[in-house]
Image 1 (spheres, rainbow, N blue to C red):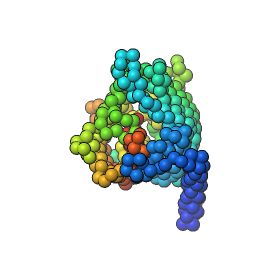
Image 2: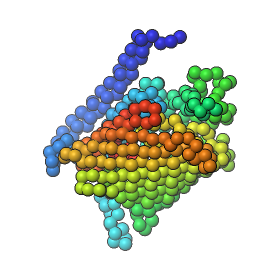
Image 3: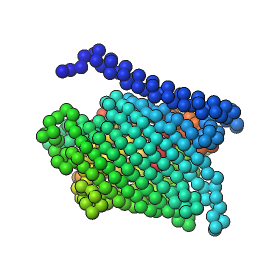
Image 4: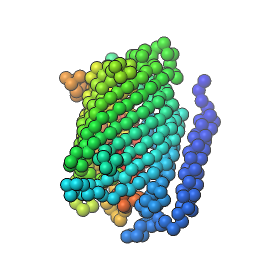
Length: 396
């Protein structure tokens, strides 16, 4: 039975009520912490503008970030609460006499709900063991997500299938810094347990890309990574580059239902063209070997393009970005990208290259962290999309 206009309105009202409820929680959390530390100013000591640097540093590093979710693959609208604890570290001087800068420790959680009834809860931590010179990341979560995947048909069109994922995920990465602290390397591990249903189809007639063992699957992947990070900060860099190469190996020896390899290479760089114009370039490539599950195939990650819209055994993404610091803390953004996803290298450009472009703005929210926040609006081959950006769209 088709939904009536009144059903649609009621559905929208329920979503809005949930989002308002989450924002109220954020507001009262902020007021409580602010009341405990009423002497902390949210005005910057240099320019008198609204700034959360001291609040983040002195209110035990705690801030609640209310986020609007705008990912097209999740229904286009939703809300999330992201409580975050930031701990700022002073630089240290190593035994070789060189100063080593320490990234802030970040600990947080997330609770989200979107228009298509997707929801997720989780927790994460990114930090540094200073004496051991180890950078680590740990995250875990559970989600009930409704996502769209697409099948290529002989007539050249793509058919959309809406799948429901009930998934538990755990990921961790540990990188040991070299004598030159910009370089680091170490192991990483991913565990993903998923149960998939097709709410709008008979389970006996799944799309061709869904194999029987995908319905209830366990992915166990062990790998490693090596990276060079010369950015001037991890949130919104003004200069520097970050290069990372990593791989994952999946096999029944480590408890996985799949035998596959995945190799990634990414490079992100920033350069101040002028004092107020910052240029950025991103190049990423991913290659899968063996028979990975369809939901872990390389895909195109560009603003304006829904997640999992274009997939293949290989993906190549390039994106150019410009930030113009127009007035005081306000900046304008412009960006564009090209990408391709394919199964065989001899058919790398058999399909048209996917593109996207857009614009947006940023506000310097926390000067001492060089943290900016704003909104991006992007156009892909099919539709427009918008994004709430915390830090950078290329945040890694």
